[in-house]
Image: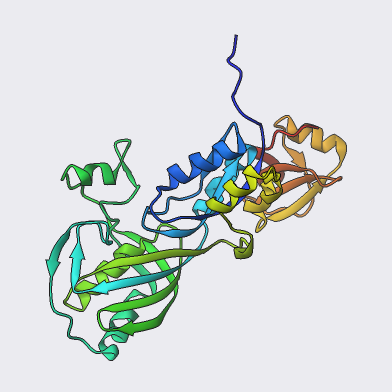
Length: 303
C-alpha cells in the first residue's frame, strides 16, 4: 500500500525575497512548512550572502522550474577591492591583500571586457555538481576540481558608484552567470583583487518585483490566519513567454492523456503552452515532425 503524501497538494509560484544568511534550500524548507505543501522546489540557488528574488515552485509548477533556471536575471552588487577571498565573497577567508591605486577611468575601461558574450570559469564555491556533489562541498575540503570555462552573456553592466575601495554595479545577464566571478575577475584585471560584499537579485525573467514576499511577512501573515495561497502566482507564470494554443474539449482529453493532437499553423520544434477552451492550463507541448502538438509537460488538473 502506497504511503500517503504529507501536506497539501497546492500548485503555483511564490516570489520569495530571500533574506541574507540563509541558504536557498533552508529558505525553501521554511516556506514549504508555512504552506504545508507536499512538493516544492527553488529555481536557481542564491548564496547565503545574497538577498532578493527567489521563485519557489509548488506542486505542478515544479514541472516548469527549468524555464526559470534558464531565464535572464538582474543583480545589484557591491564589490570590495584590495582583498581577494577563497569563496569570492565576504564569507570566505582572505587569501590575498593588495593596495588599491587605480582611477575611475581605468575601472570603466576594465568593465568593458565584461560586457557582451564572455567566458567564465565557475567558482569552486558554486552549486554546480561533480559526480553528484556540489562543488562547494569539495571546496570546503580543500579539493580543487577542474572546471571548463562556459559562455555567458552580460546584457547590461552599469557602474553605479565607485568610492575608495568599493564599487557598486547593476548587472543584467544570462543563465549560469556567476556575479562573484565578475567581481573577482575585475579585481584581478585591476591588479588588486576584489570580493563581493553585498549581492541582491533584482529580478528573474519578467516576474513582478512588487509581488515579492519576505519570509518575515509570510510568518506574520500565517500567525494571523491570512491565506498564504493568495500570494501564489499561477502555475503557467513560468512559461508565459511561449506561444499560446487553446484546444477544444475532445482535443484536451486526448492531450491530457499524452496523445499528440492537430493544431494549425505550427513550426516544428516550437514549444507551445496549451489551454482548454475554458482557460485551464494543460501543460506545454512540442511541435513534432508531423506538425502535431506532442505533450512534453502535462499538468494534473482537478478536472
